[in-house]
Structures are given as structure tokens and as C-alpha cells.
Length: 588
Image (cartoon, rainbow, N blue to C red):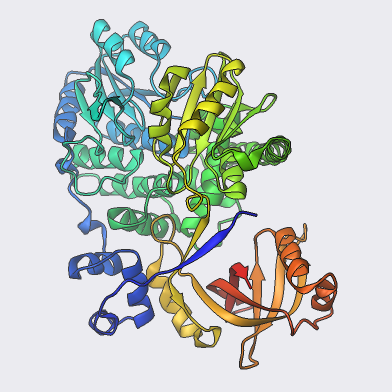
């Protein structure tokens, strides 16, 4: 297990003053400061922000031009084609544009590229098909910023291209100079453009599309806007955007609307995934609804997910949602098998000498490479690329750690790829053949400017806090921090001198640890642990002896004293609400 360093947040502020001003607990004031939310306007937006506080989409470079051009095309009855992507953000942004444009009478259709046949984003075949279908205008969503050559081809055909995207703008490095490469589209809308004045850059493709549709529809179709907000929210969570600033507002509002969604497909998806009677949280977007939608783009075609959201028949929506759930179950099994194989390969290599892990899973579906890369990265805490066979050559996905800019690393070895793209924390690559993989591994590791400290996982503790301080009232006040996720994690605390009294494994796969613990004053608490129990077992035997696990099983583990990092939750059972302690990490 990789080393973990606990980092105690020590950011300063007048916590009692903030608490008094906003009528919150001082601990909540500290949590907000730890997320770098400072100043009255930002604190008020964090606590009380609503849809009226969203930034005006017209501030985004090219947004007003894109809206004006689209309205002109619609008025002239021009044929418009949306080209999206096969992940949740791509599916959501495609549906947002499709619904918005159809609402105002556009002659519009859509294409979702096939992951294997087409790959990510625009390609020559999609441009040629648009030309053959007499398409006048292409609007991209969640892609297009790197499609320089394909947009040139469209221009040759006389096809108007509007790019809406949120990915990093490609660049070339010449010495110390960085030259950005903007495609020659009629309009480019991407907040990551260097000269874009939009005040918050960390939005997903679906939010860019939502901002455009807001401008196109004005205030005439409030029900349509309300239907589309959950799509922007779900895409924000699934594309791992920071849940700060306006993202936080969009996700909070999307969660509220998901309790009674206007879209028939979303309603069916909730029921089929077992969420019909549960209050939706950002977790459900990221780990249940999102993966179910993603499975169709991974193993089949994301067109089916679009059909789910377009149908007005509840019965048909339930049939499609069931298909997607079954696909996701298949994807889970493939992922488990692929992860096991990847670990076998790594354990057979000199993995300690590698700062960047690059492995080749010859016989696995390319669509699960990114998920496996994420799991391997978490296990070894090293930047990881997983490469599989593709229809042409080999393709891979990478997932990174803090301290390693994956996109910059790929630029340095860009001559090896037929295609690559991504950002600091994730990337996709294509190579001519499997023979290039060893060269890629060698060059990435030779270039890797990663220190030993970078390879130590960092756990950011909000407040050192004895468990005895935790009350139901305090834990309920943490609901002000919701929705939590990237950029706004669940509050995390730490304490020492915890005696582990008993420990047993529960659940159908015995993968959940249930504990009784006591603090230094002898007060007992229930605690759960959802992570790697094998690692915990090893930790106990190495530090407290071979018989320690037997003592815990018998409820006699008082001499096993550890430090824990923990989160809290409210557990509801038969109408009774109790505080639950959730262990996140442990050490001596």
C-alpha cells in the first residue's frame, strides 16, 4: 500500500466572526475556509447561491456570436448537426443542445461518435458523412477544440462549424514559448481559451451547451430549462469538475430537480437503478446514474442513451434503462477482470523503479482502459496508462496524480502518437502498434520529473477533532457543505488514542468492516470502513501481532490503539437518526 501523509489544514480566518455572521457552527466556517472560499460574496454564494447567481454565459468568448449564427441558420431553415461524445458529459451536452434547438424550431439531428469505430470527437468520416447528408452547419459539444484538420476539411466543403468545448486548447512548445492552436471554425466557444474573460473556467461541456441554450431560449421556455438542469449537473459530477462556484449551484439545483425529474428517461433511470425512493446526492450521479449511462458508450453505442432521454413513452424508457443497467453489470465484471490482470502484470515488473506505470492489456476491451487506469493509479499512487488493442494500432487511457501534469508529459513525447489529448489529470492516446509501448514507457519514465514526495498520497484533514465532540446537531450542520465532491470533499477529521475493541467483516462479499471503538475517556462508538480490509488486516498483524485479529473478533482488542482519519454521516434506520463514524485512514 502506498504511503499516506496526513496534511492538517491550518488556514487562518476569524471563524467565530464568520460563524456569527452567517449563523453557522465555527467548524463549518473552518471547513468553508479550507476550501479557499473567502470574502463575503464568495461565502454567501457558497452557502446561499441559487440559479440567479450563475455567471452570464454571454461573458464567454464567442458565445453571443454562436447564438446569433445559430438563430440565423434556424431562420434560414439550414440543416444543423450536433456532434457530441460518448461519455456522460458528451451525451448530456448533446441532449441539451438537441432539446434546446428543437424547441425553437431548428432542423437539427445529432451524431454520437462510436468509441471504437470513430474514436473521440470529430474525424474525417463524420465530416464526409455530413457533406453527403447536405448538412449546412455542425455544432460540436464536449469536443472540437483539437479538431484542427477536420474543421479545415469541413471548411473545404463549405460546412459552417461552431465549436463548443471545455477541454484544454492544444499547444506547441518552441523553447520556452507556448503557441496555442485554435481551430479555424466559424465560432469557437471554450472557456479555456487564453483570452476568454469568463470568470470560472472549470465547467464541463454540458454547462457550456446549457449556457448557449439559455441564451437561445431566453425566458420563454422555463420548463425546458428546468428539464435540462439535471443533465448539466450530472455531467458536472461525472466529468469530475470542481464543485465550487457556479458548479456547486448547478449541481445543488440539479439534485433538487432530480427528485421529480421532468425528463421521462431520467425518471425511468432512477427507478431501474433503485433510486426511486431515495433522495438524490452527488454520489448517485457519479457512481450509479453516470456509470449506467457510460456503459452504453463503452460497450455498445451511446445513441441508446440519447434515445432514453428523447422518448416520451415511460414504458419504452424503462426498457432502455434496463438495457443500460445490464450493460453496466457486464462492464463491472470486465473491469474487475481487467484490474486483476493489470495487477498481475505490474507485480511481474520492476514496478518500484517505475515512476509512471504503462501496461498493455492485450485482450481487453479498450473502453474500460480508463477505469482500470484509475484503479491502478489509486492502488499504487503513480501516474498510470493502460493500453489495449484497437481497430487501428493500440489505444490507451491515462490517469494522473497531484504533481504530474499528464498532458504536458504527452506533449514531450508527442511524436510517438497518431493522436492524443486530455488535461493534467487524465488523457487518451493512440499509437501505431504495440511495439511502441515499451518506447513510450521508457521515455515517459526518463522524462518524469516526479519526486519521492510526489509519490506519497496526501490526505487533507480539515480539523483534528476528538470523536466526543461529534454530535448529531454538528453532523447535520455539515449538510450545508453539500453537494460534496471534487474541490469540495466531505469534511474529514482526525483523532488519536482510539482503542479498537472489536472488528468483523459484513456484507454479501464481507467487504465492509464494522468496528466498536473507544476514545481515551472510555466512551464507545460504532464505526464502519469501506476500503481495503486485507490491507487493514496486514496493518493489524504487523503492528500488534498475529493474534490481534483473533482478539478483535472476540471483542477483546483494548490494547490495539491507533490514530484514525474519519468522516461522519447520519444513519437512518426505522425512523431513528444516529451519527455514523466512517474510518477513511489509520496509522500508529
